[in-house]
Length: 263
Image (cartoon, rainbow, N blue to C red; front, side, top):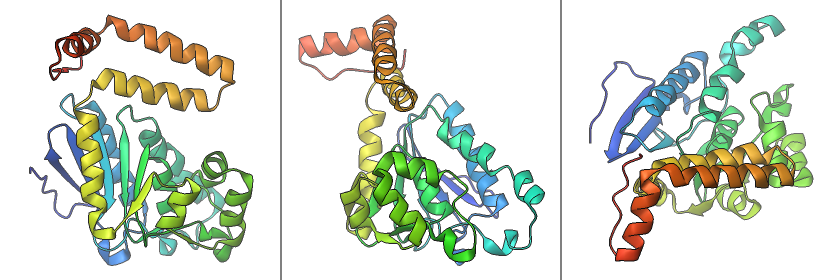
């Protein structure tokens, strides 16, 4: 395992497996509460990882006992509307939502407010049974501002999303999985290993096909069904120009393991 040692680093970046980048939020003393510096460091780390030709999957987790306990209220409590706008939260999160690599969130402990919204930017969420998901912003006089009002209603439907946001009440990781907010839930001590297992599996698959599938699903999510189906078909057709398609189908016919190179 290789580790960058930016000291003090708000993001611990490791490569635990070939093609897999692990990014750990590193403010455990604040339950990884998201301040400007941490958001900026994460955005930059994701951008750098997405540009690395050796990387195929990103896993995001939190150091300590929490994924991310929300925004750092001490930093914003006395801010003005203009001051909040200048923090550029949406542009920083956009770097994550636009990342071409699959992102897996490994969620243990608290994923509240901005922490829940961060998890919602992932493509796969592996949660601890006893993780705590929620959007408690209404309890401090505001509302979600990092995507939850839009992403939750698309992921969960109106009534469950409304309950989460309008009451501010949390749900467990197990309930999140039952509702469709998490891909799966399991014991806390197994979450990171499971996320890395999934990441390794994806990293061994053809990266152009994986990224194309992600692109088609996200783009089609906001489109009419007919538009999404046409987009899917055109991207599918384009993959027949890749060497990975030739290799994959040839290996299948020859009953051997394919060697995907991302070409």
